[in-house]
Each structure stands twice: as structure tokens, then as C-alpha cells.
Length: 143
Ligand code: HEC
Image (cartoon, rainbow, N blue to C red; front, side, top):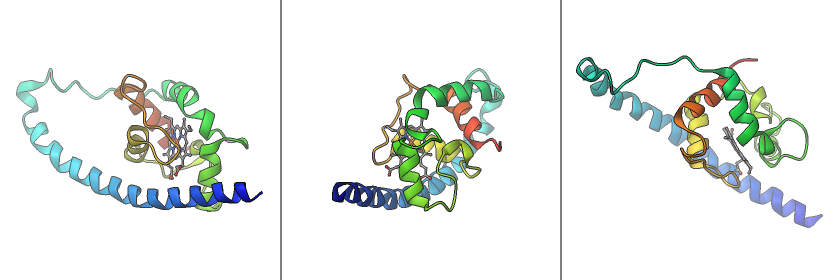
């Protein structure tokens, strides 16, 4: 009983630390925008370096989610990710990632590459950049 409460407290501490992380993501994505400008200007002579953007593949995104995220973030009870997000947001927004409409690709990429609390980070050898793009698009999609 009290063990459970302690875990709850740990999660609360973890998630409040993460609040600061989310603010950092917004700052980081603003920085990225300005970083990209010189690259765009140089693009004409180095077009082989910057391939044209490929539209995101939602079906692939769902597969990546099922393989790497669903064990912790699926909708039904007993998944640590869904459970901690339920505690973090107290039901104000959906606890399951797939039901959220506020997960921008920047936020998803931040957590996937950095992890958070109990959540591990994922290397490019596990989730490549193209898979991350599809996964982020899948989670950003309004269903
Ligand atoms: C081992 C379990 C686990 C796995 C696997 C996992 N997560 Fe998490 N995730 C968590 C936990 C737990 C949290 C809550 C963070 C904390 O512990 O403070 C979390 C938080 C998040 C958040 C933050 C949401 C918010 O509003 O704070 C995002 C986004 C996220 N995960 C996305 C993913 C994605 C995408 C994947 C798959 C690539 C994934 N997670 C895989 C456990 C996991």
C-alpha cells in the first residue's frame, strides 16, 4: 500500500521535472528554425545533400509505435507510460499518446531521443530518422 504511494510520489517528481523539459523543447525548436535558414539558402548548389521532403507514412508510424511504444503507452490499464501520464495530467488530457491532439513532431522527437524518467531514449539504430518522422506524424494526426 505505502509502497504504491511512494511510487506515485516518485512519478510526480519525475513528471514535474519533465514540465521544465517541455519548455526546453519549445526553446530548442525555436533555435532550430533559425539554424535552418543558412542551410536553406545554400541548398541550390547542394541539392543532393538535402533530399526533397518525403510525405510521412502513417501506417509505418503505427508500426513503429506498436513495436517501441505500445508496451508502455497503450490505452488499457497496466502500462507504465499511460499510468504516469494519467497521474501527471490528472485526466485533464488523455493519458494514451494516441488519443492526444497536442503532440507536435518536435515534442515526440524530444522524448524519443532523450527519454524521460522511466522512459528510455531510443537510438537512431533502433528508431531511424525516417521512422521517427513517421511515428511523430502518426501521433500528431488527429484521429
Ligand atoms: C519503458 C516504458 C516506456 C516506453 C517503451 C516508452 N515510454 Fe514514453 N513515457 C514513459 C513514461 C513512464 C513516461 C512518463 C515520464 C516520466 O516517467 O516522468 C513517458 C512519457 C512520454 C512522453 C511525454 C508526454 C508528456 O506529455 O509528458 C512522450 C511524448 C512519450 N513518452 C512518447 C513515447 C514514444 C513515442 C515511445 C516509443 C518510441 C515511448 N514513449 C516509449 C514510458 C515509456
